[in-house]
Image 1 (cartoon, rainbow over the protein chains, first blue to last red):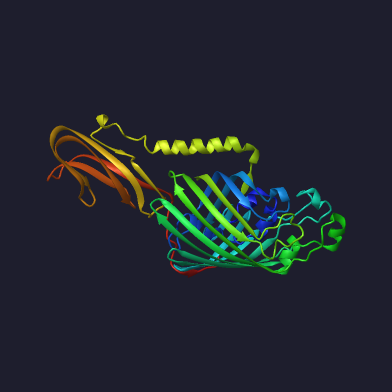
Image 2 (cartoon, rainbow over the protein chains, first blue to last red; image 1 turned 90 degrees about the horizontal axis):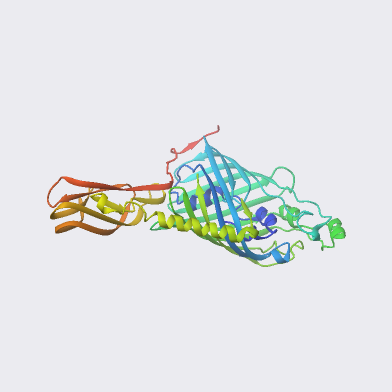
Length: 278
Length: 140
């Protein structure tokens, strides 16, 4: 998976999912993992898996900042006549809907709509009693993907059109895959830029909230966030695949939020899973 | 979309191990009784992740004939001899199968064209490949 497994381990997931560099990487993540050559038609699939992960990173709750956990992996993609719907783990966004506007051997240009998960709420922890629940943002924008042999470059720009955060997020991802016998390796690095509105909505603490919760007030600032992942996929049969990933991502510019009880400059994790592909 | 179930860790770990063991065992459970057939392969299937990829598999092929003689195992699309034997009526060869398509092997008497028996190593895949149409702009 291309976002930190730490997201599976702690409640910081709610925030990290919204800020992940890979929240817009539905195609590139699966394309790299499945070793798609050049700009092939995207796969229609449903994938259900069971896995284990170990991670360490920042967290809204101290004791959830590192640990071992099991997870169930659900992801799917359906493509029809240029339209596509991506669900699940490949994107880190629960739902991405899009339309492929342009396509050539080297380039693909999509219009995309993605809904982030929400953020911190009173249900997150007793520390946050009285805090305003952060709603999910509806991010609409464009995504350009270039295919250069085994290298894939993807850039995207999205803005919240629901008026929740009014934030804007830009991403740039560069990935590559390799095959060694039946083992399919991939690597992916990315940069994510979030503007101050986006960060302030999800990570900021207002004066009013500070008075109620006792958490120090904080104004979110624009941030640049680095992510990286390497992984391997091995076909066990025509329907079963084995996956393993290691990921590291930075938290600079985000983990100084007073919402975090445990702050680390980097999130890192390792995960392994067995998945059934329909 | 990932759902965590830490409290089910022991049960799920056991299930994971069972699944791996079942798959490991299944690849070696096919067609290994040479007495019931003149030509058998273990395994008979090679699975790649993506259609069009070269699939790699260590394959054992065993054969048996009624008569003693000189025999060759031949890959029938290229007509390459995998191995030849002299004055035997049974043989076994272990080789590294590498192909992006299914290949058929035949046992033949040396320097003859008739296949006494054949076997196919099938290449299959998880994800099918299909090329997108050429460059186009479109709006619905």
